[in-house]
Length: 300
Image 1 (tube, helix red, strand yellow):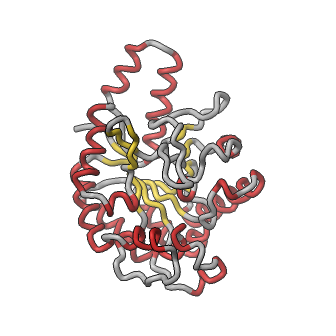
Image 2 (cartoon, rainbow, N blue to C red):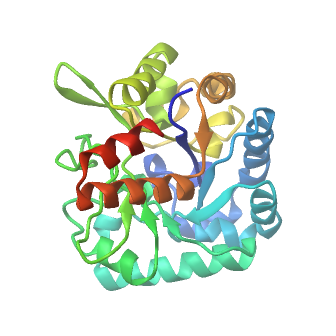
């Protein structure tokens, strides 16, 4: 069996996604059809089928309203981590606002779940070259890892120059960044870590990408999904831009079956455990002996 890959769920509801931010106001959220609980519980049951453990990056806004759900996630052996308070993209914040967002979300998640939060994922992977202060804020607040970088160019998102695999962004801190998975084809990076790409592209592409990372690169892949992706019955939003709207609704009816196939085909685990292994590997690289590094890679 190959490396244990990182499995993650970004807990946000259908009305909180970036695709609809221009047509659904935040002050409307509390009045809309809340479908998070049902969808997350379906995902939990699906993961239980193969005893797959995952990290659930949770909005503080959701955590504050769904204490029983967060307790259930933790009770089933999964990790609770932060997805920020209300899905604000990091590159649209000032440093002080980002710090306040981190603190508010973490408190809500820890209060609801009864566990410590040590991981963070930026909404829409919005930590990039425009936010040079963000890693320092995470490190100063004691976060062990972030999974907030998409090392690929995609519209105004992505950080194409970032490393493809785990790295330490600060020389003075132990913080580890776990970028979402990309594959290589003809020298170009392709987004292959989940979300809309997983639904829109053939399943065979996703299998090929993960196998490339596991077998050729000898590294774990990182996969993510959202609860609304398995929910074909969610309300439809009118007025959103055509491209984002099409991506949001694409193949939602197929998502649960695709996800079941994926988690059965590969080995999966929590991102906090993956971050621990990657920190040890990075430490071995910094210390030097090539033999130690090669042994660590063989161990997965």
